[in-house]
Amino acid sequence: MPTFDELMSKLQTEASGCYSWSNSPGDRYAAHSHSFEKVLYCVDGSITFVLEGEGRRLELKPGDRMQLPARTVHSAIVGPAGCTCIEGHR
Image (cartoon, rainbow, N blue to C red):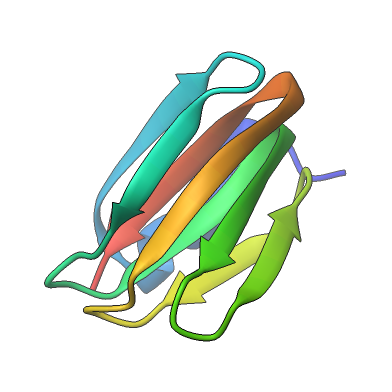
């Protein structure tokens, strides 16, 4: 499994404004979108993104990557162990 530093180094070659964030088990993000393309790696725990327009769920676990196009409406549910993710924008 890649380390935090390895994933952050990789992310920094793909995107700008890179940072990390964490959430507690069961936390939720309501449906929203961004004006930028988001590149995200799950570092620890798990999080499930719901792509509202497609009705599709995408569960990310440590080492998994998600690329989310600008203006994609999505929500998220944090897994039972919480999560730590890193993200950047394009």
